[in-house]
Length: 592
Image (cartoon, rainbow, N blue to C red; front, side, top):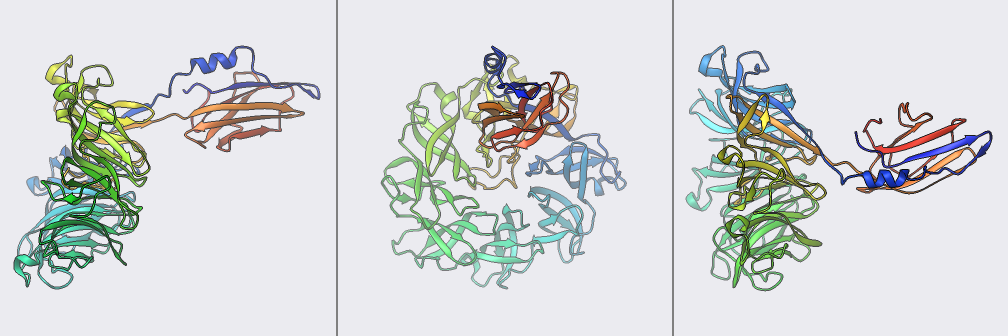
C-alpha cells in the first residue's frame, strides 16, 4: 500500500465550521517518512514447458524469444511434444494474451493461406498493438516448389499471405526471392526489403522495398535502378528502411552515377505523396565537416518515428567515431552526438556510436564508445539518450554497480538496447565480481529516469521453484538496421519487458516483467468554510489522477469520494456532522 500524501481533518460543531488543520506534527511526520518513489515490480509467467497446447494436441517444450505489444501480449513460435502427428505438427506460432492464456495462430501442417501447400516451420514474428502478428513461415508440399514467406494473423480472422518467394513483383518485373521484414504498424501494414530474381535488368534491378497492407497486397516504395528522388544518381541498394504509423517509409540507399563521381549514401522519406531528402553524402554536417561513407556508417542507417523524424548515423570528415543526427527533410538536420565530444558524464570522449533507436518524442538512444576514460574496459561503453531540443544524457555506464549490489556491469557485453515512448531503456549485460561467478553473471536490466536502474531478471534468480540458468530478450533490430516502434521488441510503452528463460530443472518459458512508478502528490493548500472543505495539490508527473478518501473514524474509508480527480483541486460540500479526515492517494491504489 502506498503511503498517503496527506491526512487532513475537518471538524464540525453544530453549524459552525472551524478551519481545517493538520494535527501538530502530522504533516511533518508523513512528508519526512515518505521515501523516494519505488516501483512495484512484478513477474508473471505467460507460458512454460509442460503447458498444454491451446488446441489440446500436445504440450509446449521450447519457445522463441518473444516480441511484445502495448497491450501486454507476446508473440512467439514454439515446439511441442506428444502431438497427434508426431514430428509433422510439433510446432506452431502463438500469441500469449495473459499469463496462462495462449492463442494458437497457426500450427505446423495447417494449410497455407492461399491453399497451396502446408506450414512446415515458423520464424520471427512482429506484433502490433491490435494483437495482429506478422511472422515468417516455410511452406512445404507446395506446387511447383516449397517457399518461404510471411503471414498476417490475428487469432480470429482468416490468415493473410504476405510476401512470398516466387510471388511476382507488383510491377511485373521479376519475382520475390529473399525477404526481410523491416517494420509492422498498427494499421497492419508491413515493410519488406526484397531480393528479386528473373528481372529484366539482372543485377541492376534485383532489389526493392515494398509495403504490404492487411489484404496482402504489396506496393513498391523504391527499387534498385530507380533514379534518386532528388535527381542526382541512381538507386543501387537500400540496406536500411523503416515504417511509421501512417505507412510512410524512411530508407537509406546507396547511389551510383552521382555528380560527385562517388558512390554516395543518402536518407529519404516517402510519405506516399512526396519524397523528402533528409541528408546525403557530401552534405555539410551540423557542427562542422561533411557526411562521408565509412564502414557501417553513411548516412544510410535509419530509425524513424511517427512525427516524420529520421535518426541516422554517419561518418564525418576528419572526425573519429562519426555522429548521430536527426532530420525530417524540412527543418535543418540536428546533431545529437559526434566523435570527440565529451561523454555526458564527463568520463572520456566519444570515439564511436553503435546501434540506436528513436521514439515519437524525438529521443534517440544509442550505445556510445569512449576513449580517454577511467575505469578500463568495463567503462568503455555507455547507453546515451539525446534529443533535438534537450541535453545529451548518460543513462547507464559500464562499471556501475548492479541494482542489487551483486557485481558490476561489464560494458564490453552490453547488448543492443531498446527504448520506449517514455524514454525507458532495456538491455542485457554481463557482470563481473558477482558472488556466484558464472551462475549469476548476466542479467536483463531496465532504466527509468525516476527509478534509476532496475533488475528485470538475472542468472541465479529464483523462479517457479527453481533458478534461472539462461535469459534472452528481443531488443529490436541490430545495430546495422535500427528499428523504430516496438513491433519487433521485448519492451513496450508501459514499461513491461518480455523475456525467454530456462531454469535449472529444465523448464523453459516466457515471462513478463512489469514496473509501475507511483506518482508524487504535493499539497499546495487546504481550507474550509461553512459546510465545505477544499484541498489543492499538484502531482509529478503533472495532472496524474488521484483518489480522495474520507473517513469519520479513521477506521472505515469505503470508496473514494472523488475518483481519479486530476484537476488539482477538490471541494467537499457534503460534510458529515462531526469530523472528517481526508487522504489523497494515487488513483487505483486502495486505502487503507
